[in-house]
Image (cartoon, rainbow, N blue to C red; front, side):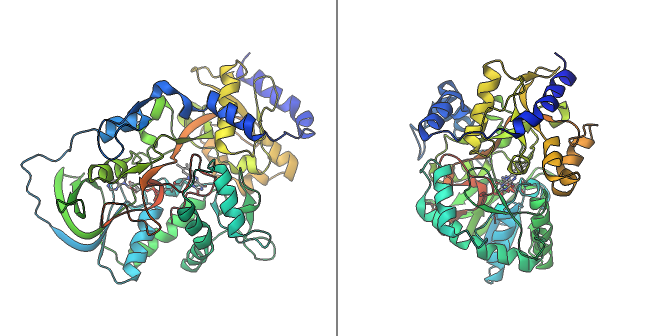
Length: 468
Ligand SMILES: Cc1cc2nc3c(=O)[nH]c(=O)nc-3n(C[C@H](O)[C@H](O)[C@H](O)COP(=O)(O)OP(=O)(O)OC[C@H]3O[C@@H](n4cnc5c(N)ncnc54)[C@H](O)[C@@H]3O)c2cc1C
């Protein structure tokens, strides 16, 4: 069968599928499915870490190799500080910009160093939105419970309490800085429902949420004249010899020179690990997402938590070739988009948690009900035209302009044709251990955003990245 014929099957089965309600799986069924098909359960991909605070614990080979690597600093290098600051913030995404702004507002002398340009990050790519309990029928308690359920009850309760309770004030801070969140007809914040959530709780800026938030945060960092080092990657942390952090060594990527920064406090906000391409998966992540905080903090003695679990987002593109791994926002499923196998059948409740939906897609493909592209990728359909059928013409253009454009660049019209997707490596569920102040067990070393661990348990709920 060619792709066009297979696409036609999606069109032909649409009306019948619209009449169908997909049942929710029982906890036991979800467990069995995940254990059988989720990439976190492929024993051959894991090995014990050889040394350091997590010695003996299992993680994927790619992360274990990273943690056990040699220092890039020559042994005869004598660190002479060129900068001396109160706070060195490492990373120019949402967590880095927000940390720098908060520290600056408290009167600290801040330096923000980032590997690429300010804003080159996963944060600018966030599409689906940010979960904040602001709707009248919602509450931080409900947000807490949904997140706990999504994380298989393995979340750090204290971190989770802080996130759900402080979420609304962070939303207010962003609004005051100028972020243009979507509004309903009455002018209230418009909220959408995300996978695994019991309430509509996602605040959005169409499907450009991260871009809009970062527009404002980047501007504010520049407005406040916070000193910046761009194209400067932290490659090692400095210690007082007793395990406390005293600064960092950076590599200036323009001329390969090492720069030493003495700092009373270092905040690592270097994001996730997508570019390690764990288990050969494509990724939705930007090129700087190479797990740097994990290894930097580990070498200083800070332990990692839940570093054996990763999020494979259900809908990564597999066609056209230029979009392999690129994200197709969960928002499309939130607004009713069906997942359809090669036989024209729905096979999962599309709004279940990401680990369940991804496992179901992998099952369909492994059991021969997937759709193969000419270059050999196998996936399932996401019925995008259904949104215009369900909610009226123009829905995709209005709610998902980024998606429409992402595909239009390659002559695919998602208003007319469904798209082929397969899970893509998206997020590190675990990370560096922190307390509710963001401090690691290594004194003076803090970690913010995706690089930190514990909040999400074994599966992050959509919109919960907590990167601000
Ligand atoms: C395509 C996509 C869509 C997403 N959509 C959503 C969503 O809708 N809702 C949601 O909640 N989450 C979403 N996420 C997840 C969320 O965007 C990220 O978890 C979050 O933005 C991470 O923020 P961060 O600041 O921790 O890391 P990042 O935004 O990735 O920033 C990390 C920064 O650190 C820099 N850096 C890395 N290593 C070093 C180093 N050694 N030295 C100096 N700098 C370094 C990087 O260059 C980058 O600037 C999405 C992720 C992706 C990839």
